[in-house]
Length: 59
Image (tube, rainbow, N blue to C red; front, side, top):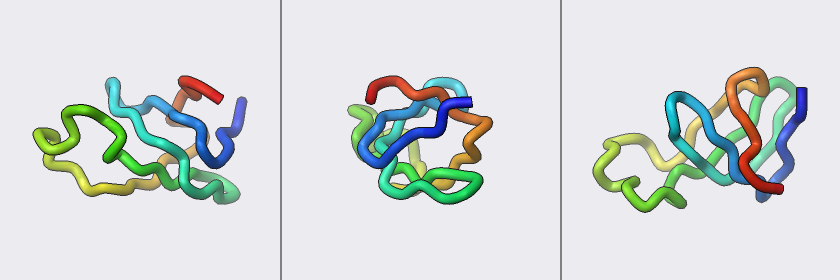
């Protein structure tokens, strides 16, 4: 299992993407505002994702 680093973009939950802001022991905190359609999603700006639940898109 690859663990993301701060600054990586990750994809999770059916296509949502976010930039990693903090890496915790079992999860990462991601900023979702990088997505073009963020305003239409009605999601919070940041969310927590378990390491098992995302895929690193770019380093």
